[in-house]
Length: 326
Image (cartoon, rainbow, N blue to C red):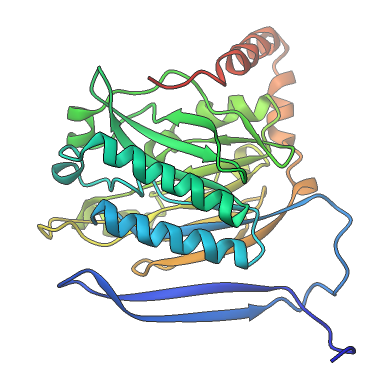
């Protein structure tokens, strides 16, 4: 009817799996109307984002199908960016991924690029790919035309398998989405503040943080209770923090992962949070005026004797930003 007030809404989808054949058997959505906003579009600069929480140890065919599903879902919900977990296409389960045909990995990534173009949305996905010198744990930033415009290789490897098979990258992430400077770290990199604080000094207002916090069962329980898996960066930067983590157990039952993906504002306040165990998508609208980088700007000025060093490091970050990890 012409007099109806149309309110924005956020969609959360839950999936229940039959783990015998890894097929979804139940899918249901929770639609939450946002009554805090009227029908008028905001005048301030905003960026609607989605973070997807997926299983970390499934086949690439399964992962690709779920990734394509959530790209469509995120776009249909009005989001401009959708972030997926660490290595969401190849999985992070090394006994499986190290045997993958690399041509098949590239084809899966090409299919994601195609889907981004079809849905006209920014997509950030992960793969672990073989190079001439071991493997690289990669994040790929894909624009709404379906082109990979930025790639970042995880710098600090974590866990025995990753340390055995992978080497670290040698640049920091700095790229634009819809005119907004952003940065990116992968999982363990989030424990090294210089990897996102330096890009924030260069102007980044959003940290995208794909993760797979897989670990022994006891360690995962401790991560959950201590909040150790992903710690919000807003309180030491004043930028947004978007985390897409994983759920589920390893095929041998020896490892679990902590879930709890989140989107937090520059004060560290939760805007959206996921559960521990289920595959789901969370969304939030980022008001970029809130990301004033106040703590970062103060750090660049005080103490004065460090100013020239920060300036030089920021210049180096910018100079290396577009290097392709190889």
